[in-house]
Image 1 (cartoon, helix red, strand yellow):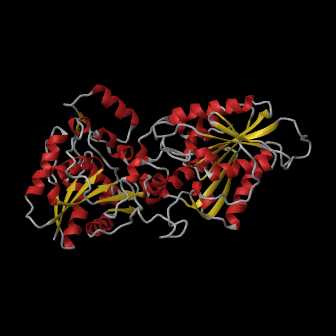
Image 2 (spheres, rainbow, N blue to C red; image 1 turned 180 degrees about the vertical axis):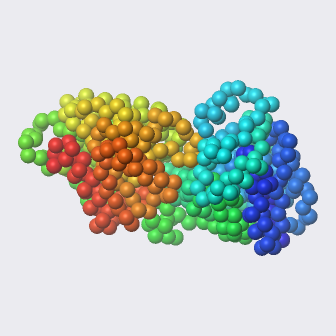
Image 3 (cartoon, rainbow, N blue to C red; image 1 turned 30 degrees about the vertical axis):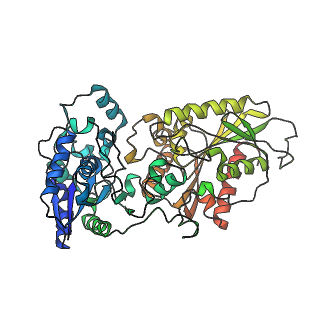
Amino acid sequence: MTEFVLVPGLFTGQAVWRDTAGKLAAEGARVQVVDVGPVRDLEAHIARVVAAIDTIAEGQDIVLVGHDYGVYPAVGAADRRAHRVARIVYLDTGPVQDGAVALAAVPDQELRERLAEDGDMKGELPVPSREEWSRWGSTAGVSGEALDRLTAHASPQPLGTLLRPLRLTGAGDGLPTTGVLCAESGATIDTVRMLLRFGDPTMKALVRPDVTFFELPTGHWPMLSCPDELADVLLRAAAGEGTRLEAVGEEEAGEEEAGESGYLRPFLLDVPEIPRERRGAIDLYVPEGGHVSEGTESGEPRPAIVFVHGGPVPEDARPTPRDWPTLIGYARLAASRGAIGVTLDHRLHAVTAYPTAAEDVAAAVAEVRADPRVDADRIALWFFSGGGPLTAPWLAEAPPWLRCLAASYPIMAPLPNWGVNDSRFRPADVVAHGGTPPFVLIRVGREAPAVATTVAEFVGAAEAGGAPVEVIDVPGAPHAFEGLDHSDAARDAVGEAMGRVLGRLGLE
């Protein structure tokens, strides 16, 4: 028989698990929800989970389930009782290692920094109000009644549980694990696969037969929004079911199912092999005898389109973004139609690095404009995926030479599980006031729900503010579709978007 030990996350206790625990019990499993009680630090919380394990008879398959912060005491207890634990389930949270600090589970960058600076081990975080829960994770799917229950049963979070490092001996290394991802929080299996393809070392460590993943189409509190579905997933996880990362090669699956990022596959259009010119962090693709619009003579300065990759991309990812086939394809397409195409590498290596990435992009644009072959008064910027928030500074203070912005399947605001609250990178807040440059947006139909929400908010704000946003829909296409969908509709969308941008630059 399986016995689940459920470890609540920030502010929560036994009440939040009521419905899921009841469903598990009805299916024949035994369940304990760890009572955090008046623990003051992480070690005390780990001891509470160890005590729960020690009450379970030998021979039971023990599955530890940690929700956000709760994974820290769960993993700590597994390290102390590795021989008793059959599996660890990470519920809407990432992997943790020796020395990790649970403060990372706080989804608010500014608050994390302030708490780390204060270092007050004896204080506590106050319970969020009913209206504040969305700051601590997506509340998608949570009913008003459930939100009331969440608020009524919440308890202050002792800072000692968040500031004391997790200490592991390594005894629990290699235990079977399952990640349950909540799509409305911004985490999906496709995201995990993309990070794996980018070479993220954390993801590489999860390529094992006993590591599985599930995805739920809900927010951060599935025990409230879909308790029965969560119980079903936990039962399947205990049985060793789920998606495995090792099945990502083309020999096991088709191109899209294989999970390889579209950025790394061949571009959907045949474009001329225009050579690059590499200058520091930028590459230029300069037209040579390609299409030149009427009135533009050879040798005259040409407009430029700067293509800005998304992310976060691990710092050691290879190839780097400017060598991705998708970015090269767009730059060569632009050059074949008369503009100078530019790609670059910027330092969006973490969700907290948008300010650094913005500086890199601004520096690259300045360098491009200084090139004598570039018409410095005709520049367009084209952003991809996680680069979407980087459009906000250009929307807010658009110089006269910026003729157009474009974005392909963009993330138009920091996702709920990022914990980034920097108002400088929220394009919807800017575009709502109008007065922004023309904006061409490629929107895909098979987008992750959390990403689609940010796009809808941006488009709605643009409409309300009368901003000139032109949307090109590709209904059947996935995120990063250029390497995954070579249909006529996808090809036409890229061609149409390029035509509209070039038109703003005076080329078509």
